[in-house]
Length: 272
Image 1 (spheres, rainbow, N blue to C red):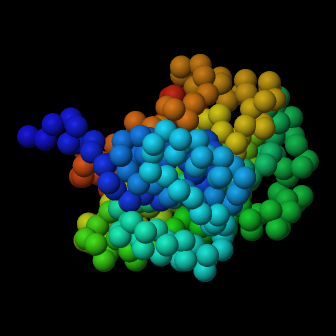
Image 2 (image 1 turned 30 degrees about the horizontal axis):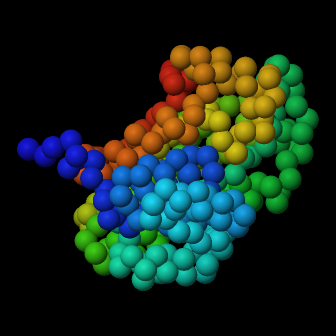
């Protein structure tokens, strides 16, 4: 019987985290590196990336970074190849990069918000949200699978959202269909890739204090609206997600694939 240490052993694993210079992505990178994995962070923000890598390597962790726009498909291919060349393989990929969709068609106070009305949505904004929050996940899985098939398997862990399962009027309209697409893609990829030893799962957070929503949550009305949904009366902290991330990357979850695991303080129960 495996010991607890063996069940959660990720030492030496080659790991990629997209959007890993802040928030939930940084939490993924930290928990993997803290437990002995070799981590490469992809992020579009060069300044934040340099700072995070410097802070993490100061703690004697094996972390490096590449400036990558996940919407740039040729650059993504290059970045994956660079990790495989440096580490010799790719074992775990966190498809985490995402952007906020802006305000919804209702305000937290229950008033109609003209800025979020469907007829006023900016087409370029819609396209950007779908590209970053959905299409980039396709690109990430594509290149992860390309490398993992060569080495006998791996783990792909996608950051989805409880927004995939609900209609939330105070969140920008493109966010929900993007995340619903992510959940469906995870299930479909689990079906395709399981035969190759590649497990594909989604982490579905509720409201978390991150950069993607940090600006909104500084607004007392917005924060109160999200806090009121939680059964434990608070918004999630990135530290809260580390245990689940480690579980899905480690041998402990070797029989889990095609799942969307909710981590939301019970918010989804109250919403539904």
